[in-house]
Image 1 (cartoon, rainbow, N blue to C red):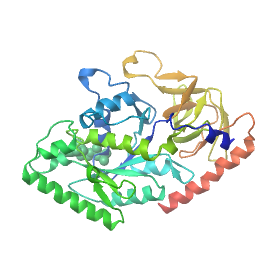
Image 2: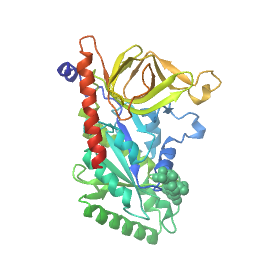
Image 3: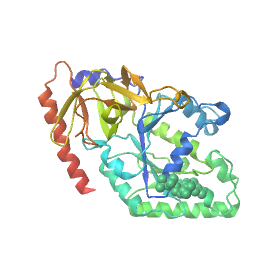
Image 4: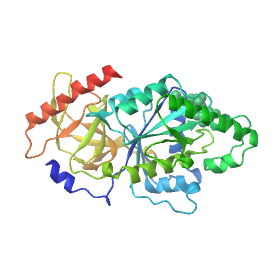
Length: 362
Ligand code: GDP
């Protein structure tokens, strides 16, 4: 089964990469996410950005708009269909977002406050990223707080930097240098992304401001660049399912539901699924696959849109029986016609010990 799934993959049909954001409290993770999501008011709904369950989906059209200012020569190619960004920042959620040693996230944004440098949770985040072998970039946030900064909203950061006074440029260089030194003490080579000639060896730093939006186009461009050019193997569609439970929630009228991120494969209404439960494995049938109703449709009675089937990558709510004891962080396996359900139950429960071990260690 696994071999057939691997054979069916193609580099011409990539799925959307999944991105997580983490870092010390108050570095601007939430505000940065808000800024990325912010729609351009003049253009109405920006290219179909959709709020999903626990995640926001950015179709490639929206990314093209948001990166246009740093892609004026249009030299950048877009090979992925979009980008899925997990909405819950912070490393607690990141710890759960894992299956089998590897991370659910294809790439992460580690946010560092340029005025504060590395802080305690920055170090914890670095440890987690390493343990999960997750590639990441650093958003060096709050550049607008450099003394005397003249903002050019939503601009590319190199252009904005070039237009600052000598004093601002000096303070910037100074703080970048300090951050690079502090990262070197953690064993990480880091370089400003536009000076980084060896992406495999050096972590890229992207200066950003979540308030003025400067550097946000650069950050998105870098995420797309890195994922589609350096990790296309991981982004090829599998016919096999890769799915992780983010949250277990009771919803009025639906009972206990699970919010999952489908990172690969296709899930259909009626599918037989297996996942971890507190009192042992759970096997059940998907009753409904739900995403939130788009904002403009709020007058519609139900809060959710039903789907017959969904394709990776996306966040979706699953309604099914017997989910009360489901465990967040668990993998979700699909029981195919030729599969032995008992075997899959054993397989999924074997994750639980590794999940507990990982939590103990981190
Ligand atoms: P989180 O804890 O990492 O999610 O941080 P928040 O996004 O909640 O931001 C913490 C505080 O820093 C808030 O008061 C934000 O308004 C502020 N903040 C975040 N990003 C920036 C930035 O780029 N520039 C400035 N000046 N303030 C920021």
